[in-house]
Image: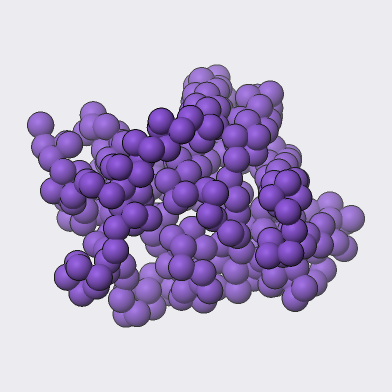
Length: 292
């Protein structure tokens, strides 16, 4: 999807900010006990991750290394911009997630250059899309809150010394994922970072066939826990915002959307439709969904 030159350019922009999130926004907010548990943890920011996955965030609990690939950050950034732009135009944001399904079920071998175009290219975003204040505000909140959540989630795997997924059952894997999610949400609640991007993130991840997502298996139980935690702590997440009252409905909407995603994961008809869309849709059909 991105050339090496494009990723190098993106790395120059992302790496200083990602290190700042790791060291200051996250590291400085840990309790003394959490710092001791995270003492061996380190942040790794390669251009690409080791898995062939668009959301390739992971941790090595043996070495303490938390990996946040530049490719995965850039892809989610572009996806967040696309979703925000579609929303700003009154268009159905479903086309952005259908694009993720296409990445799962269609081969890039037949495409020009043997790779998928970016979300911004596929969905026909204008070159000056970032001159739209709404798009910038919403997409940045989506990206920053999701990156924070993911870093905290991966750090939890290191702190709790979770086992690798190749050696444990699906039940244990889900227990580890929920435990890491809970830690990430607790830290975000502690410092009042609204989980503004999680509905977009989980909607996208749910299109990458969660049953076969080796590094971070998704389930309705996992999403249900996230939604419940957000709903029950909405006030704490929004308490330092300029207008907390205006944030509360947005936080509750996020929780409802994640609950909806949880139900869809268990609906075989919905999963079959997503597979058909992923296999049968074209890039032109994604653009035409917002041509009116």
